Image (cartoon, rainbow, N blue to C red; front, side, top):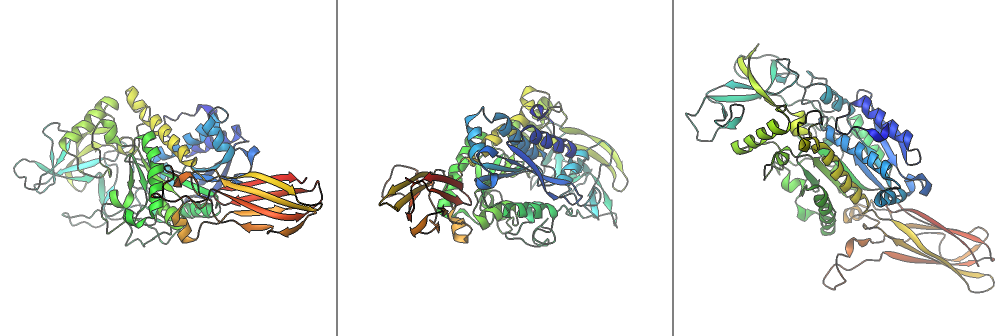
Length: 569
């Protein structure tokens, strides 16, 4: 039954499809499921649309977009997206915020952009599979290629004795490898560390390369700043060359009512925000203030800090990440978008200053903390003791080390956890991030026709007046970036007055944009940003008989569609 989904275990493709269809079938007035594209290997890319259809079509409401699973191994993201669907559907009519959201907004939730890669990650030990175009064993063609050499069901690491090696065994625990200090000698033996695998292609018996896998990073395949593969690893053959990225781009372009976006990734325990390619002083100050204010809600709910991708999450500022969905969504369309890195294993283990970017050589102290976490919370399942192995090419090596999928990349599933705290890592991740997403969605602009009044001036003359207001937090143009790029369509007001003669005013007119509450961060002061109008009055002069019915519709791509009718006096 849909209401009894086990969120403590990860979903393969068949289970995911079953859960999504079950949720849609159980809540037909609130949910509809569609296939928006096919993966490289022909699997469906699903989108769940959520809204209360009794209060209007989803296309007539501001919408919030959520996606997950763009990277193969990041399966906790799918859990979070499906949990959000479940949470909204099962709490409608019970929770006031959820009911308000589904009455006034629409949600477009894509739980797994990359079903091929996820299936490989869930069912094989392979680390690099990208968009699943290349099956295990195909993603690298020469040099050291990942492979489960000893057949234990994991791809971990190989340590090989080498006097020039960068690593040595920790004196505190023989399982842990510690990075050799710059001037260190005489404390060996020393080792080289490699991913477990075999050498493919020609080999001279001495040196071998480690080829970057052909992993097809779908989050480098979007048009914003796209660079070819030789400049941007994983970018693909051309912008939107991958069917999964094309499906997402087409969907966003086909839904101009999207007023906010959340993209889920793992891992790091961070809410990432723009810019991806430039420092904060390149952002419009008003937009940066919006990101910080909305982000504060995320930090309060999840404990994750909000950081700039360029300033705090880019290893080389001269080589910024380009071609990502968040860059495309904000830089081109001005949609406030967060890219959340779910789960920080270092934080879960109790490391007080966890790394933002989880690719580093940890200190002996931090490694010991992680190992204690593994022993106590996971029953030792996250680390495989080093075992000698006769490698067919390299001779005697040792294979072991940290497993990857459910220690660092994703929270451990309940079946792997051995304490109550560990069993709660995944559910707590899903719930807290779901709540932030919903709070972000509640910032959307929201049009309302507050007043529609008629005053008869003479026997056949009527003055009609409408007051259109934005009752949301964000302005109807969302951001200054959207204004600058011309992607923010204005509010249109249309009058239908059958049997009436319009004497003054236009039957269809643009009234520009309306501000939200975002400008009003304090009581008015001449020293602060001056407030823009949050409402506008429109008037018409009609020649009409008593009893005639007029309809006024106010519409904004980001603020929704509202219509009111009035019987003239």
